[in-house]
Image 1 (tube, rainbow, N blue to C red):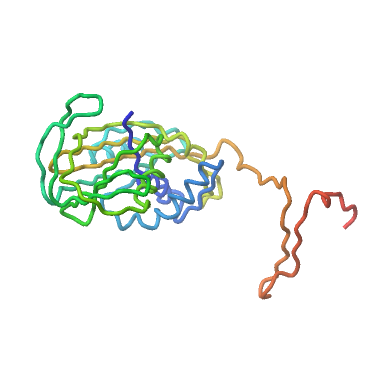
Image 2 (cartoon, rainbow, N blue to C red):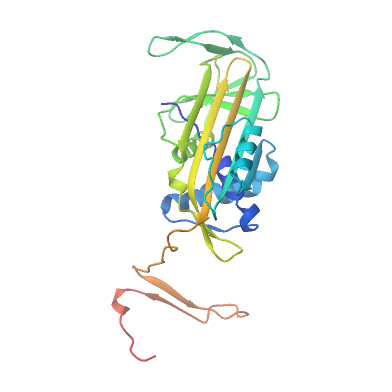
Length: 283
């Protein structure tokens, strides 16, 4: 099944909470998936958002303003209500690139034998092969952006797709010769909930703990022999946490360090294993 994911709009929608909760929120995970997302996506991407003019974001406690923001950018809001004491965030992405050299509209035959609308590009396309024999094409555009195409097995949804894309671009490649690139035209539109991010929480300037309670992303991708356009819209509901922050439970050997400001080294350190897990009595 076709699907897409834009990690930048998810980061931008989370980052938009700064507009209400205060700048430079430090978000905390409730599980390993969220911890991985913060490390691989949020922390590297958040500082780059101001450099990307194709992304816009909004935060408001007024549903009508949320709906109007999305409508302004060509989207129908999926979240249209805001419970008292909560607020909504949204982020949109819209990137149109035109091929440096337009191609021709030529039907392409799929492996299933069916003929599909296709695009044939002969110029300003580079071809590569990976170490495991997979082939990829890199299409030049009228701007500095490049568009890569390569056949892979289905990677899974959302975060797995984003990781697969990064691995695809990071794989060692060697140039190869091919006469032209021929691919099916694309008209993809999808809506997915981002359940894995629900519960991500932060401490607001009001000293209360806030969490993401609902999140959804819509994506579209259109490609033909002339251009490609990728769009995404994320929406989130943010409210006071319904659960207390999780505890840090030390349940395996651990390190204890005594530090004093101004000294070049820790005053004392110990690595404590189960054999020393005992009640010390009076200290």
